[in-house]
Image (cartoon, rainbow, N blue to C red):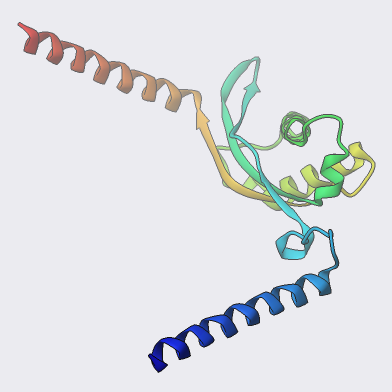
Length: 171
């Protein structure tokens, strides 16, 4: 019986301590104040895959594919009248088309630091405020026209083979 009473007293004391601590922590932050996001108050926003066709000598030479993550202040991004992802996508297209000297088949001509800095700076200049603090690359890839054609042919052959196997099994 004494053990049950001791356990009940211990549970009450632990509960009171937790409630007291939570009120103390809330009092330091201020009532009604929302907690700041982690990592310095910046939000990390991911883009969908951005696919840019690269045109050389009046024909498509391949596709530049990238997926970006950018850091923004939550208050600033709420003020935008257009989606931030549309701005980022537009700047990726603008950068790639305004720098035709970049040859994705030659890794020496690709400067990812310049790419990230250009995207950040042009978006901030366009918005007129320091909206994007950093641009991070989640994924980057280049597919030549030949690679796309080869992948399409392989997929087409495998689909045809599976259709033939299915038809054979039905008979």
